[in-house]
Image (tube, rainbow, N blue to C red; front, side, top):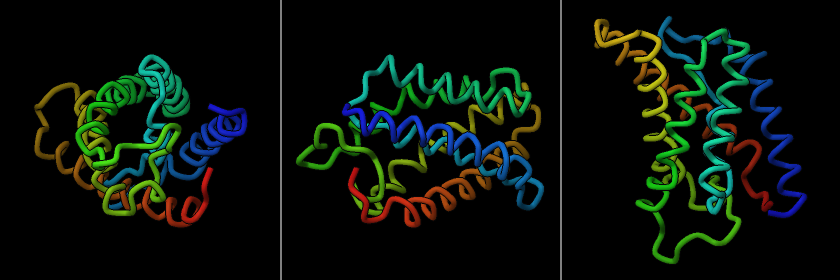
Length: 172
């Protein structure tokens, strides 16, 4: 990865964390839908990234959010889990020609349909992992599942909007 792309990824990390912590921390719809836009940083890491680096970035990103949310590693655990399954999911939705070396999963790579098919299941899994750890079990299963569904929908919509606003037409 070139120094320009590394610099862009470092700046993206801080921007996503700051937006999450400063603006989206208290944004809740219907007392159940939470927006976790910071997950987009992890999902937009280059396709050919090292698996160990992805796990480390998932841990650091989740830990950064945990520090501000005071959530004792729940975000870190959910982020590491989605980074673990990310490559498997990317391989299952690989286009026939494959991905170019260094390509970044974004709206530019496969269009909005591909992006939704890529991010929605991973965000859903992230939210299931996060909210059921938070609930400490399955005692409140339906309420927690309701939160997962609404939060997934909210997060996916916000991430798609951000992709259209900032990533559309830009090649990095």
